[in-house]
Image (cartoon, helix red, strand yellow):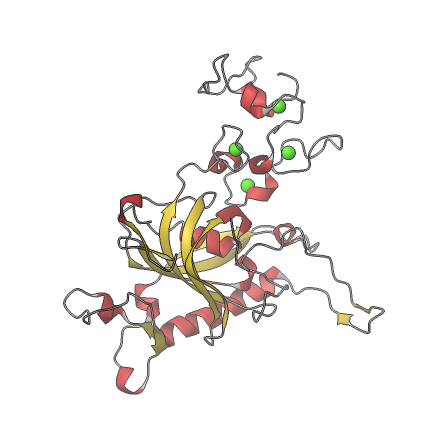
Length: 316
Ligand SMILES: [Ca+2]
Ligand SMILES: [Ca+2]
Ligand SMILES: [Ca+2]
Ligand SMILES: [Ca+2]
């Protein structure tokens, strides 16, 4: 499995202090999410109001012959002065971010961030969750059009390992279906009924004060997405619990659900990556299956305290 640059830097972020290191590099304390989020939103809204995409090419009555289904974004000006803005087509969702999610120590909790997305073509398949594995082609750019990351061919991405705006944005789109996959002679592939869309996110849902290639710190990002396929109920740690159900607090962030976090002798992995969620030495899989290996649902709760055995270190 390959990943692009959008892999989240969640374990690589180091706290920066205002000092000069041995190499003469000056680092400064990160800005506050609550300062950057409204600034980014203003920049994004300005962008969405002054740009359009080639929506006419996607409309059946005006589609050019041999159209390649590529999304092209341009400025509303000159001969394009009367185009419909991206903002008119955009839907949005508010997502809360805490500074700890970005490896920062500012202590900010639940700062709202607006994610914008446009479904350009609805795929004929189902929709992934933000915890699923997805087969995508994508292009990531800055609002000025600078391309910083892309995959021209389909690659599998596990959404919990991508930045949050990306994972949540992709989950708003529909995929194609496996029966429409066509392998090309050159090894690439096409899926004729895939979903196509645009995601625009503030930096707090992306790299915030870190950078990725040409995407410098505090950059709002735009992604063009082709969603080919996805794995329904992806189970990242293969413990029998779908990853989406391991977001126990349901906040869309997969790394703050770690049942055995306080136990230094057991794994520090968040539940979606931990095959023994409660750290009691008995695998989650064996705490939720019968003697034939079939998953018991609802999950067993031997002492009837409302906490299923696989999350209850007192029971195994
Ligand atoms: Ca699992
Ligand atoms: Ca969570
Ligand atoms: Ca754990
Ligand atoms: Ca266990």
